[in-house]
View (cartoon, rainbow, N blue to C red):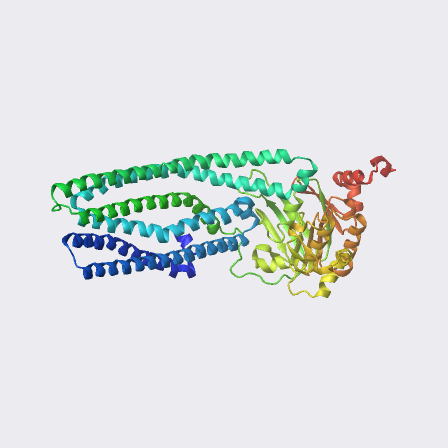
Length: 582
């Protein structure tokens, strides 16, 4: 875990190393100051001159100033190192997520990935900040103060050897109890974020069904659940402070009472006033170091689970990888499914697709229809290799999709998915996702084909109109047409419309399909639709049922021979089967 996280330090190695070095200087000076102070007290007691007194004063001021300077520089280096480390960590995670296949994303969840990129990274950042400064300072202060305590106080310093094991045992017990709680809390954080994300995305539905109270209660219950576990963990962690305070007061009482006794009874021979004052200072430094060390352990305890979750993302490798010598040219838009079967997970008991055998010629228009859950979308997601087939082979242009360079393959396959996504930015910026180098004329041509140019021109700012996040300021039909135009700009060899014209009227739908036939005749077009009208003029229509191909044929052939297709057609056109037969 540490090796994986350490890779994200990179250019911040220097401040990460400088912070401990500067802290070491600060600690050494802080430990020498009480020794010099004790010597000053003894000299005053012995009747030193004003010159000698001034000399000690100058030395103490210089040492204090240097200690302060070391501390300030250490703090600055620590802040630079921890913030830079967190930035690199987020960047590395985000870059790795971009390489994930759909299967990798399915393994995690969107809400969990968001939590890992935000809350978990913040926890690790705080722990790293403590590690490069406090976790170095405390052990050094502990060691130096302990040594100096023995030098100044002799056997009296043995009291520290009694308190340290007590504190160590207490810390071990706290960590053992809290780790499982933090692990559970972070999983509940994921669920809480998922609930928030779902609610905000579906806010229109929530309001239209007047379910605000229900959603509020659901969120309250989830937040209360997180609070309960966090409270339990914090209560256990809180025991650390009274234990520390108890040890501090025991040591202070012992040093004050026994030290005073020695000073009085031996008249300063066994222990003089200077030694006692420095011993008190060292006692305080030792116990404060232990207290700070306990805080470091608490932070690391919280951050360990976060670190493990981050490493899971950083170590996750995409299940889809380029071959050693990938094919970098797609010859044409022909598609062959050779006895293809597919399941979303190795743990899945049933296949989403079973023994699919389908051959599509380049430039052909293929319609695809079937009931909900018939795996139409699953089938087309194998074409751009969003998933790999579990069994069988998918070929594009006569080449197995697994032999292609992923970027080359996906640049030649444009998919307009069921969930159309637009991003915050202008219409032009959204369209250029399809082709960064597209000219304004090419943007307008693609929009005319997608029947989007007309409504875009009606906007006050035309193609420079700003699209809100998620495309909330355009209608569903407008969003679909913009997404189709974006896909067309890739000038693909294969165009897939996955139920992506449901929000447009039948006339506009027909115009879009007509534009496809006239302007991109060589592009293979696969149209998944619920409306028969959207696919009845296709060269062939594939009827899917339960993850299998039930029938393939033209509109007329399927009306005569396929019961599923005939039933869908009659239900949509309100024509009875008997009337049609007549």
